[in-house]
Image (cartoon, rainbow, N blue to C red; front, side):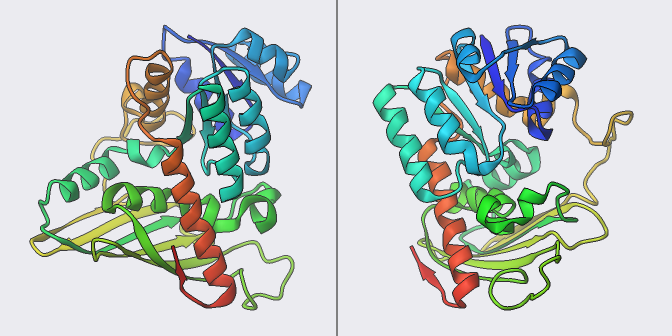
Length: 319
């Protein structure tokens, strides 16, 4: 399978490094920043395309690792070229963008997959399976927390471009909750950055707390932060009529693999990003169904949009 990566930023590098572990994948890359693309490809000994059109002619599947505002434009070009397409989360900047991408996927017959990698983290997968199997009884309350410091790239902090913390970061939790609990019906959110809470134009952080009511009666609390100086951390706490399940990333690892930019307790082929991309390649070659559907990507963006509206207006938003 010849996979073409669009974008040589942080996620483009993560994806390229994971594809490199797959002997049945051949990579090519395009980025509008030619110098950046040349350095990126030289470091990994992969082919650089001179244009997006050249990349799409050369590849059999596309992987879009670009800033959120251009997901719609680039993904539609990839789909229209007949290429199965993976798009980094969030699927797009707005519901309207997602709907346009889904319409092109259906029109062209090209598979569209949003990259919701949290589903591939073993702890989140296990918590999902425990809840789905009824091992904690009827779920009543789920609390999720994700975050650390603010991103370094300025476009993340521009809500108009990135959607802010509720679309760029909390969308991970929104997708996992929808996958685990079903259809959301009411969203209430508060944010430090949105509304009238912060007047300082140079303010770099954000903290949001979102409450979501689900059709099955469960209430979810999602804490999202770009204001934690202690570093990145995620937690799960799910309680039901028959028990509870919890996870804390700061306490979890029992085996660490050191030596890279970060330490983790995953072997290369157990890494969630590897598993996500392996699942995409297998779906693109027709071996399996997509692990995440485009409609699920749209629903996560719908919840994020509702949370942004609620944070700005101070009112709950019904879906």
